[in-house]
Image 1: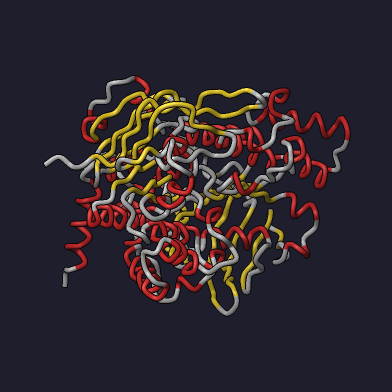
Image 2 (image 1 turned 180 degrees about the vertical axis):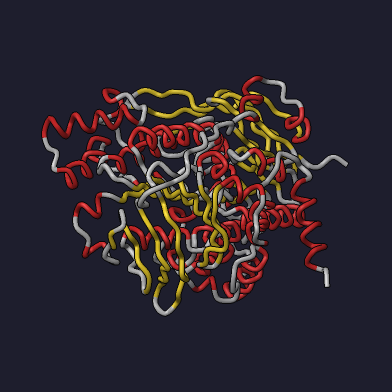
Length: 541
């Protein structure tokens, strides 16, 4: 029997304001969604995916307006309905899971209080029942210690855990429609499998419809019944998932299927003194040891990928190297010389030599500063550049990251795309003229076409500037593209390390095998097969 139609969007037109002028963002897109159906929205950065997802809630961001078309949600025209009615639907019957959990939670309130707010305010359940429901859904989302994790503040859990907590929060009222906006972007591959399975199970159990926005084609293959492809606000193609994967009609869709072809040329064997040596480092927070006897080297012109699931100690290792977290035991050597454990005791030159590029460019760049200030400050602070010399250096750096200086130097971060913001993060790191750059999940929030451009840029800069990279990532496709060596971490311990080719071809440890087997494939049946296989293995005596 055909499922009831829940959402119908016809000829949707949405505009954004630039100065006093309006320009089109969504250009006459149609969308139909049935109860219990999952629609995947894909396309590169700027395609209009998130804008269309928000419009399905009758919502447009500041500086945008819905200028045409209809949005019918279960018989309610969300475009013309009173704002009070729309607000009553949001959170209760329509929920939204944002890409950046860190930017979405209120840092001053515990997770469970934020979970309970929506069902209590909407009258779905009393506070006591909402707390019990939170614990149950935290368990479904595979969060550790579901009985107590809700009483933590957002900064007291990992990024992956926070993303799962937000997904649980969106499900609190058991809505009819959930818009998932890149909900697994920040998750490692093993956690991603668990979250995808949990989302899919709950959607099926409650007959919830969903719009699943993602740039990860292998992920959307597991989740969506149908896929819609967007390009610069236009619909390119719409088909059921299997047809879209096996026989896309349009050339643009075929180009999406073919991305991530970049592979770094094989580098000569590392020799000489490493730029950075981590030697038997143990470190932690309070009485808890997060890192336990961690050791590895990073040489010039080499990229060492540090991989592992959320909470394995990847970012904590970076904090130790940069001096943000002094180690309890062991040493960090720079060009063979010991670094003081705390950044406070390091010289300005020692601080200059190690720079970071962060995962979320949106939160890493001060929104009030123009690009000349964002890039110029490190050059001024570390190198003493001023006046015309500083201006020339800023322009050189913009050219180096392939952004035209005259067009971009006085822009604000809000006037850039996601990929352009990440390029500014790269330029800001380069401004100090470091020997080591730590890349912390720098491509995870980007679509696959933009990812490829960033990886090629980093590879080119490494060769031109003789840089060493520590590449923290949960994306093993990225590791295949850019790494020379791989360090696998689990629960603060290095379980395996070696050349990339050896790790991928012949992993020695069960945990490394688990990571490699968790990389989604472009096959709608892949997740089902994996879950059946793991379930059978778990039942073995």
